[in-house]
Length: 254
Image (cartoon, rainbow, N blue to C red; front, side):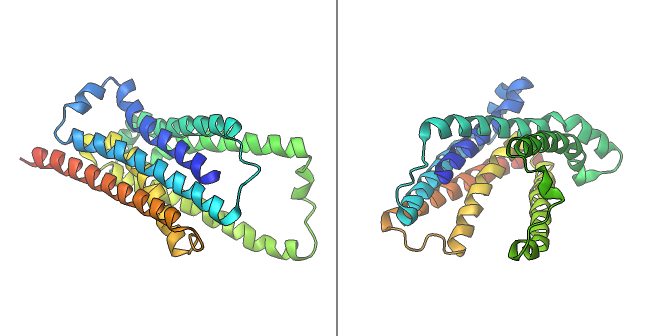
């Protein structure tokens, strides 16, 4: 199921994307020695548990609403979502590796918007790999002609709306990293935890959005209880992360 594999991928990304940058830079031991680090690292761990619980709740929802899905194949899906989690963490690592570029931008007056310069490089790489994959799919399915052969009937009339939604999706996707950058520069000694917080909040708010849109109507009580437990754990993770950061900033202030 999509929910379960997505949660596994995000959980892996949360852990690796948080710990890989300080590990590679040789600062992991120093991170553990900072005031509030225990709360921050505990928050990351609790967040991973909450993410996985959210994925399990999503899988239960799929079974409740759609029945047994014959397309579910853990042997194929699990390695792919493990790979997705690692590659997602690599994107997070690229943002950390771009810190020297952001510092140059800051020296030239970028201030809290310094992180945006890094996206020119990190997102170019993401676009390149995605673009090549799309071209390969076009070649495989022989669908290049769809760029010049417009569909007829209702599908053609829906194209402007679909293009507008695609543009809106791209803007919203970038928007998450715009605000991510604004928060990242304010994290002080715990900048490394920004990626983990981002992943936890991603799952938390996507789950809450599902509730608002009533996607969980018709599910069993056990399924709704699983979701409630997942949301509670995610909220505890956010509180733990926030408290750890607060302790660190309090020490710096004094």
